[in-house]
Image (tube, rainbow, N blue to C red):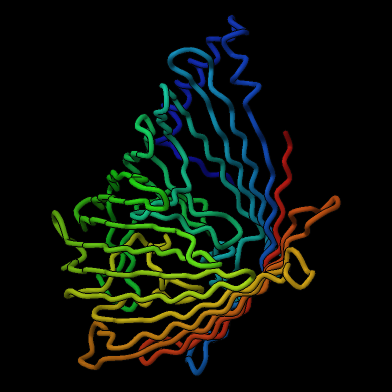
Length: 421
């Protein structure tokens, strides 16, 4: 199976033709070839999620292998530079079974069985003038208002156009329109859908496109301010305000990440009312091999947090299983990281965190509920030799809730990126 953006291809083809037309001038195309790069990333994931005391399917367990081939050209020389990138994605089933599907590692057929393999092709045309670049085609964005999920075999991919500009020192502007999405366990290009976790909103509500614009500004040493605006067509408008900081304090480093997000319904508001203010912040202190962090997240307004289904909400308490983003929910996080290099094991790291949420208001109930999650992770990265940079991650999570399904989850992830040229 092969899927690509039908809407994105025609402009990309035109751009390819424009680049090919410069073939008569080899010198003009020197940078196009010399600055190109290619890499192959292999990701192997085993995922087991056990739902505690739940009727129906009480277990999801699958194992798969993913491959991602990234081909990136340079730009043709001249005032206006042209280029083309390609992304080939392939997922292969290693183990699954009817009744164990739904991990989002693999697509699921109508008969309840997972696909043996699935693949996609993404093409992106790009144009560059000075420090401004326009890209049209396939994207894996990591922005406060749209963050593609990349925690399975293949990443979630959005289609459309994005422009970035760094003409002014310390300031980066990002803007554009995304009009389709291919979820991580899919080959189909589809409309964007509003996430309806815990019945926060009407399920299945689709948007024609997402418009976005924002700036990142380093206004002082160690400080970066962020503002982004997004409009998910006829569903919600969102304003994001953020502040990042990092400074030496004593013998260690104190860093903070403060975010405030305002979401309101817009247009036809087919999802019903969207009314949410999300304040969340993470403060960390790193000292030698140790790092301690405290996080706080508060939801206010009439609804929970609004974001695109399948994507990762840009919240500090969005963790391995849960997002702690129900209406009125207030949650705290305590986190600890340790680097074993200090005791002679370079490449080995450890992380654990505990998140507790209270006073959550769930649709269809007058009761208030609480929930908690505990995560543990070990990661080892090979430091030398032919397998340098190969990594192994072992992740464990336990989640308990007064109103959602309890779950215990284990993941084993092995990954490696091979530079081709």
